[in-house]
Amino acid sequence: MESIKNRRTIRKYKQDDVPAALLNELLEESFRASTMGNMQLYSVVVTRNAEMKSRLAPAHFNQPMVTSAPVVLTFCADFNRFSKWCEQRKAVPGYNNFISFLNAATDALLVTQNFCTLAEEAGLGICYLGTTIYNPDQIIDLLELPELVVPVATITVGYPDECPEQPDRLPVQGIIHEEKYQDYTPSMIDQIYAYKEALPENKHFVEINHTETLAQIFTDIRYKKADNEFMSEGLKKVLKRQGFDK
Amino acid sequence: MESIKNRRTIRKYKQDDVPAALLNELLEESFRASTMGNMQLYSVVVTRNAEMKSRLAPAHFNQPMVTSAPVVLTFCADFNRFSKWCEQRKAVPGYNNFISFLNAATDALLVTQNFCTLAEEAGLGICYLGTTIYNPDQIIDLLELPELVVPVATITVGYPDECPEQPDRLPVQGIIHEEKYQDYTPSMIDQIYAYKEALPENKHFVEINHTETLAQIFTDIRYKKADNEFMSEGLKKVLKRQGFDK
Image 1: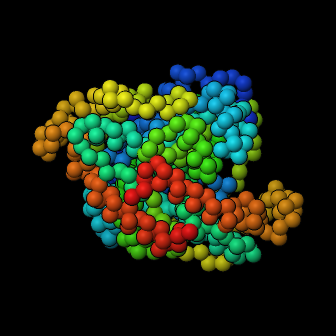
Image 2: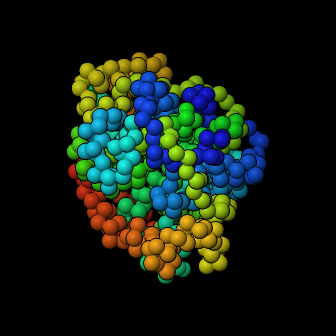
């Protein structure tokens, strides 16, 4: 599929709005994704209001797409709706636990990717914000997410106003394993990362960040151990707060 | 997109093999999905060997697709490759924690759904096996997954030998929230689940299972509280075993 093969993340959008009818149609189609026992364990919160976007932005470290995109979508793992149905039908729900969170998160993420594909095929551009699970507390407060609902992905959506270079990808041989996982030897690691390390933009990154290697940009600047441990604790507290504590 | 709009899960496959070149091409395209900081935190294990399929089957509660499909794909959250690269480049990786597991699982699930879309667009049929996170221990042993690698999704793949009815979906109004999450009132729950409850096949399920409501089939037979709690403990142990324990 050309739209997948040629995809690039879009961070600059035209002023044109995304019609509500088109958005709903794309979301409805995306809900055709596989779902655990056909329970559809997800909800989507649509943000178009400028004030709401400004209030959401800090949770996403003020990445400009949150306020500049016409639409921001927050995909949530949701066992609230299903559990309410159970309770209303003389059935005792047992979904306040970790596996149920992961089942619902899985459902939500499959739908998220399905939506992205459909949106891009319809000529829209998207940006996936990985920040959603870094500050879920703020998002929960702002979107008023009840118990058993946790945000897992945020997508900004709009008509593209840029066509950036396609980012590199690792060679497929470095990712696909036949029959059993073949653990990586040092020379395999060298081969797999050689192209990425040789890219002029990555060499430039190393230079301006005064690191010795590209990997150090990830470990020492972008995705640091201390931050990861801090956010892991935060995320565990959020799962407890939202009732997925068993 | 017609292939998404008309999709159905395929559990019966023709004997025809899925050519390796086609499979690799689809996987390579699927790796175009959004990925956290372009780290590509996933691996895919391809199972074609009949003995390996038989040994994988019990982990998936012996669902027949595992042995009857020409190809079984196990998508894994993988921080092993990336961490090995860091260590080899004088960088200290800090990814043995919960947020890193969820980041890698997210990457892997976006790729999984992308692959499914591409496979279906190419005329293949797929079945998503939610059982992967129920018995990850067995899968880890069999596929020899090292530390910082956890299986999160399994897909069976082959040329369709059936065209089942399309399953129902909840009305979109029950899933999409404008600006803020509107929690469900009892009458909203009644409306959202009315169509599903009225379906002849669901009425039949209730009858043959001797339950009073459809919801009870989920809570008392299919996705029970005790099972969920047991599997939650198992999954937590597996994250610890695989080193995502911080």
